Image 1 (cartoon, rainbow, N blue to C red):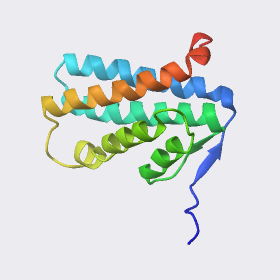
Image 2 (tube, rainbow, N blue to C red; image 1 turned 30 degrees about the horizontal axis):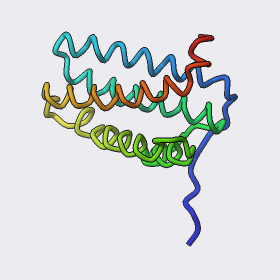
Image 3 (cartoon, rainbow, N blue to C red; image 1 turned 180 degrees about the vertical axis):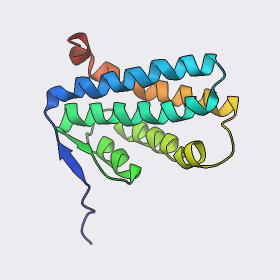
Length: 140
């Protein structure tokens, strides 16, 4: 059985700072949305934050990012970096992205408790990536 070919795009490693900035923007706006009790926005922004953070990490470490419609591919790409905690963080990203359909396409609103959990998980990913990219972030 052959390994699944993932759809990726080559990127200059220096572009990782741009993806990290997008993650930071989503992260900061997510926190404001929670304070304003806008829990649906929290969900959408948490998803965008972790996607951008994962892109930043993969571009920094591998010079590629996922362009697949299957968000599971970005999790596999994160895991393939072989960084400490990559396996655990990949699972966290997968859990957040698994909620995308509910958050963005179903009629039910995001509950406050769900928004709080999403913030906790997205924060773990954003902070992990930020620490790895700290030298890049200092030059932003």
